[in-house]
Length: 338
Image 1 (tube, rainbow, N blue to C red):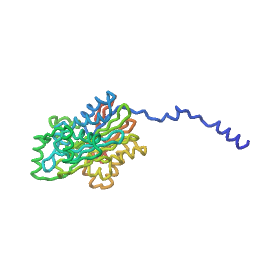
Image 2: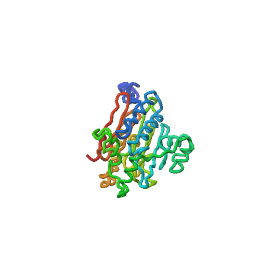
Image 3: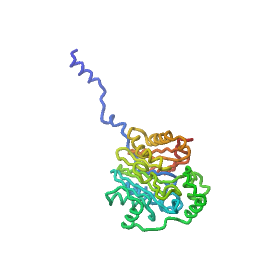
Image 4: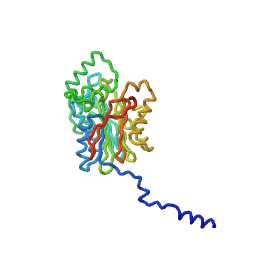
């Protein structure tokens, strides 16, 4: 048999791969979907779902969901009612990011109840990404936001108690001990003493668009001017429409050091599931400083473009909320330390 006939015969014996077979491994996106950090994320998800279920944009769902938590005075680590810094001033941080990579952030913002909305306005109305402190307040007031006192009597009393010793130590999971104290027997969900600070929200809408947001009053009794990871794009939040989105919670200084949320998304880009990507970043943090890692909490939550989600934390006590057409649940997060 001459070489030409041999090759022709060999090709005829190869299996035919149809377009159906070639695309058999393609995942169908499970949308819409919204996930958020901590058990109080359930209320935020419910508000976000009103938009997502009506085929609304993920970015709108993120903003409206975050506003629910910002307005909840029983939550001592986000928005109105949040614990103040060591000078008795409630300073808020927030960021938001859409499916096109547009983003906005405010840091150390005082007197404005909804920093998530100011962050969105920074994204949409200015050529900047970040506004801080007095500049952020001026911008908010110029755009119709109302100045109001965010220090509630409960938070003020907690601050005055803290002043007696003035001992600042970010003990893991301490920020939310007084969340929802009216239900002391509620157990882990909601109002657990194991809850922490930030609420991060990620959403996938019916059009396949991803968006995310993050908002917090930061560490209780922090130094005035301190900013953690929450409003830092790439640290507290990152969205990539080709891959997925991630957000973080916990001791922000350690998340900033590894650009945590961006790193989670990059691990997903390499083919890891959301859960595995979160786990890999937590492991890197734990190995970088093993002794410090034993005494702090850090958690990551991620979602991919197919609607798969996952989370992982350093310590037990982390939780995240999920809302889709088929489920509305709060899930205890897995952790590095058992």
